[in-house]
Amino acid sequence: MEGAGEGKPRRFTREELARHDGSGKTVYVAFRGKVYDLTESFLWQKGDHQGLHRAGRDLTQELESAPHGADFLERFPVVGILDEG
Picture 1: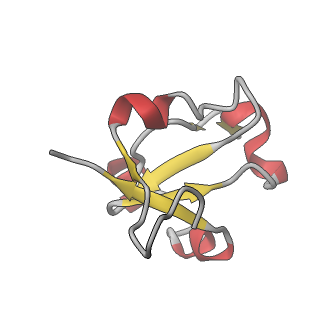
Picture 2 (picture 1 turned 135 degrees about the vertical axis):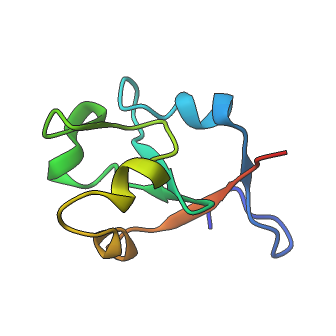
């Protein structure tokens, strides 16, 4: 896991997650507390998913009602957890 030290997952605040919105080199989204790296996905180029979803955010609510389910995220690396506190 990126940024993991001594077995501890990297913790992302919402502000840190927002920096990975595809405007730079990385495309990250959060879902159910986990932060996924979607940088290599052709469906998330520049942080946009078919005009429906934007990277750099917690998409838990949005993906709960998505037509395809969230199991597609399991194909991508988890790079940390979303720090809600």
